[in-house]
Amino acid sequence: MKIGTWEKGVLVPVSRPMEKSKGFCRLIHPGQLLAGEDLGWLDLHYLDGRAAVLSPAEKSLLADAVEKGQVSLVNLSYGSMEEWRNRLEQEQKPKKKVHLLALGDVGSTVLTALKLLGGDCISQIGIYDMNEAVCKRWESELNQAAYPWDYDALPEVVILTEAELFDCDVFVFCASKGIPPVGSAVKDVRMAQFEANRGIVSLFAKKARAAGFAGLFAVVSDPVDPLCKAAFLASNENEEGKFDGKGLRPEQVQGYGLGVMNARAAYYAKQDVRFSSFLTEGRAFGPHGEDLVIANSISSYDDALSKELSRLAVEANLRTRELGFKPYVAPAISSAALSILLTLRGEWHYSSNFLGGVYMGCKNRTTEYGLEMEALPLPEALFRRIERAYQNLEAIL
Image: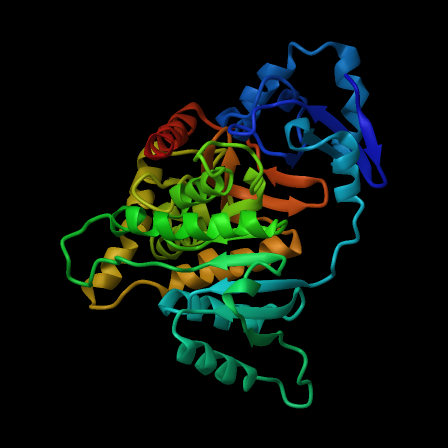
């Protein structure tokens, strides 16, 4: 095994297909060294089984650095070892420039939350919408929101031209069309939006490619998970429509939809003592939709209880629609704004990330050593639920 180094850690090179593998991620278990990425990366039982075939010498080579969390996998399909080293050693900005596309109900709520809560990690928020008056309204309103005598504590909001959209560190995609009206018979509103929103996200993913965008492409619009895949694929298509790997790397695209499903599960767990274990031991996996997987606990997993809590979380948006309102506030705050801020701070959160060709929601964080997805000793029944969700996502696109 040939390894390299950079100023903060160890680089382990692999050569894996671009369509199925990230370019850069944190190595947290020796089992990740074997074969390619797959759903087993979330399961410590699976990773332990993989690592059993490694020789003692192979295990000891990286043991200390892995224990310290200082090992990164770098995919040579996305660049040489030297190119990766140069990327990693570039100075990181203490605060990021965030650009947000579309200021509808969701986008304007995300914008407001980022403005109020992002002073520690956001330097500026750029906004763009087809309606110029909407941009002027939010620029004026939010730049008049300030602490007295500390007028630079909150990030400034600026209006962008379309050409400036990808001159940033984080691009937040909130554009959407075709949302079924309140009172419609559509059960899964998210999937009803897929075809309409797929065209929009693909258009802007190609613009990101053309701009050589090197930042985070954050997908907020529904359905989050397949739209992430659509963005990744579209950005890597050449003029003949063939995949060439010259667009966004898979880890540059993240989907922000699972945070609210976790928050909804917590909402119901607070109301019913049967679900109370979720508040300290629970996890959420999978998509922002029908295949959501809520686990009441990892160590004391109850399949029936977990499925009941999953159903409550999935149907929470319907309860809001029954009241005559569009359920966008909680998703805009929990899934998008709070989770994006946690991403920028390098803290644990829920979002969808690329795993073996599928964008899959789980607990994760962004570190200087790459994306880290939490791996747990998953009970068999829970893993099978997650596997079904993964396979259903895989079948969409």
